Length: 129
Image (cartoon, rainbow, N blue to C red; front, top):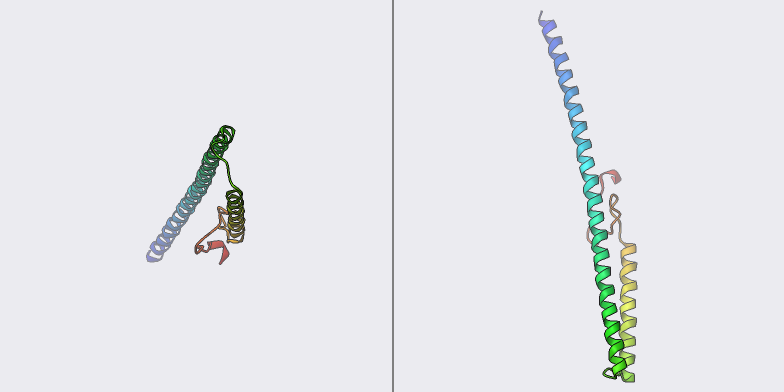
């Protein structure tokens, strides 16, 4: 009789373990799905932010161009040779800084899931141990 009870207990324990394993797998799948959704949402937010920033910069550039064009037509803004050279030098420096920045981004390690550059210390992914 005791052996039968032990067998029944083991059977019941095995069934409980199977149920717990199924629940764990289901929970892991739900967590993975939520993680993927959050990564997608953050990528979409990043894209929207970049679009908004680009649009604002373009609008500012258009405003500057139109105001400069109007000023030139009216004769209010005339640059001396020194000022023109200074402006060219500043523009070259800006282009150089942009190039250095983009090269730095390209040389940075990328996160494995979102493929965004890591500018500080990157956390190692579980699948790259």
